[in-house]
Length: 77
Image (cartoon, rainbow, N blue to C red; front, side, top):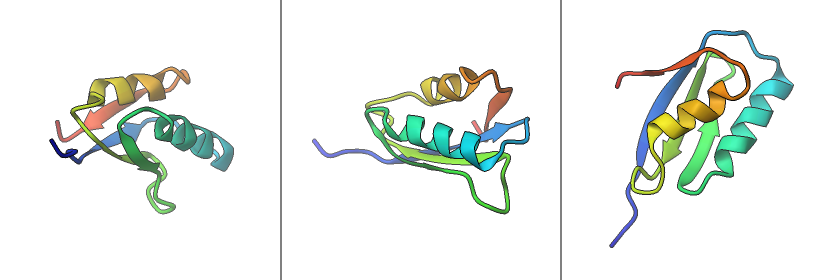
């Protein structure tokens, strides 16, 4: 059985500095099933996460972002 790849876009309401962004990207990247998490330089309120939906649910990724006291929501789901 092969791995699956999905992606989800998380909108973060707050403005984050570089350190906060890198910390959240790193934390999400450590979750089993997450291939990458990145915030584009020109869209700093959006985080794109590539992941295997067989290993981790989008709601878990959102909760990890929210655990930082941030207001965030999934886009397009």
